[in-house]
Image (cartoon, helix red, strand yellow):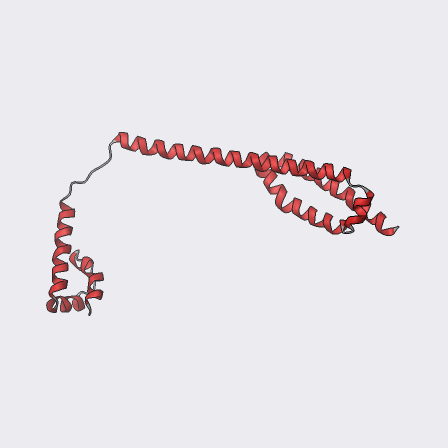
Length: 167
């Protein structure tokens, strides 16, 4: 056994927690450095055992609990603000989509030329990205209404696209 290997085992040996101590004991018999390390470990263990056990005062407990509650309150307020911002952003996006849907001109539709693909992509985006954020921010009813309005706009755009393609 080398000293590096013995260093990892000395503390456990000093506490009597080492199961197979024979290799370490053989090394300790031949190595003064490791015997000194073992003696130091035993002295430190004895000093730690002699230290009085201390329990925090009730005032210290109250301060720690108050700090933890203040942290929880801060986290809750941040989450509430985030939900409001997401809801406002989703509402603004839905309003912008509604305005854009009613302001799209035939010239713009012809210039795009990919309206059916865009409506499919927008529908998927609304169902899987916007709706969960709206549910988290404003609740299921508002999310359902916003999603229905957005889907109605998309359906209106999709209904206009085949007529343009058939002419």
